[in-house]
Length: 344
Image (tube, rainbow, N blue to C red; front, side, top):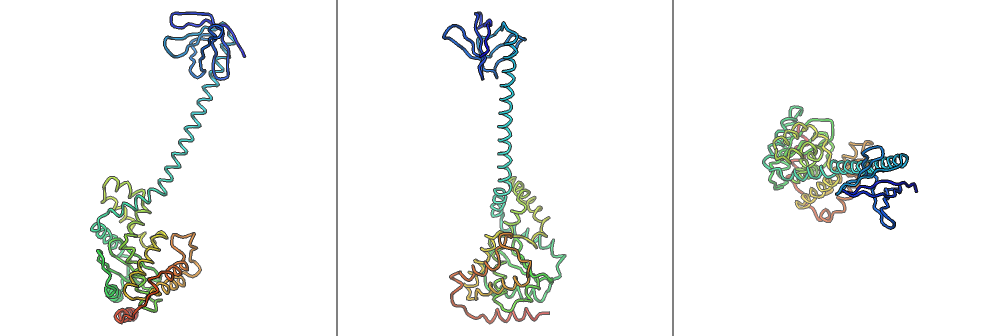
């Protein structure tokens, strides 16, 4: 251990001491058996051979060896560098943790919070927003007025109570699709109607899309997809701006992707609505088989899609206890379905 002599000033007192360099500190031997310590990261250099240490009264060392002074200076620099490196590493770790938490919030918590806030939107505003969305999209629709009249009569015959005024529009298209809008609007492409063979299939389709409206799935899903924009405007209490963001993205409703949880809820609640009205739940099974046929080889695997696999949806419907109860025929629905299919 390197050592030397020095003059140690403590307030108004001065004494000759022996210095030794330890790994992390300077050892000051005041007298045999009595020592004090200066830690390198707190030592301050006043002059080439003069050093001080914080505290009261003031402590100053005048070292009698230039080489020892240089060794002490190097020890101070190493310790300072090590501390800076440690602090830098700690700050980097904290930054990475902060970024990771931010990403988790953005991709997981934020969509859930935004979707939760969708439930706070008043129904009256949701209806107004849905109507504005429909008007924004309707210019691109080629509406089949005859089929639209029949399909609305068909839904009315289902006698499903709701706070929403359900309005269904049949649109001419070569795509087998249907989608629900916030506030009560449902759009059905006539391609999917062409493949239906029974009124139970149409009842299943409308019950499914109705559930998306009744459970506010469309609004919640849009809030999820536009969470970063919508959430902060809602957080500030600005529902109008949030609505403007949704309206600007109205076209996304055509390809709106629901979570598997929401799709399953729409299947099961829709099947419950049919069972309560004595309508055979096999309408869902045949509807899924029709969709599978229309999708052909492009059907996505369940784990690569937010929608449940169609085969799994069939099995789920068939497993529901209320779908195994007795059903009855409904001449009114069958007649309306036949008129819808024959409409030109």
